[in-house]
Image 1: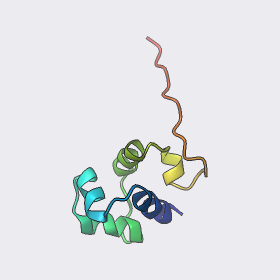
Image 2 (image 1 turned 135 degrees about the vertical axis):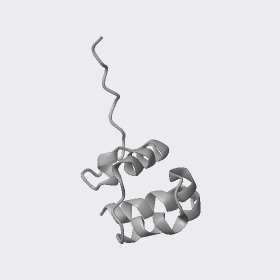
Image 3 (image 1 turned 45 degrees about the vertical axis):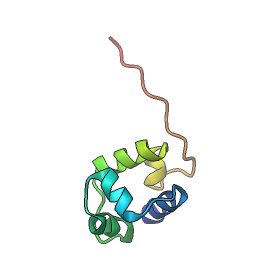
Length: 77
């Protein structure tokens, strides 16, 4: 599921693997390996892509079908 979500989000935003690689500051080949499941995508990359696409990390990870990001938690001061 995660692999398909990565590809679907990239295509839905009209981005190439090279462009997503630039967003993540990695080579296109490295990002392509994430999409193909040849390499595990790091947590920091999932977080960065979720912020870029405006979806929740749970959506990218296939834990929910609701793409809406969660509201930011208010920290007690």
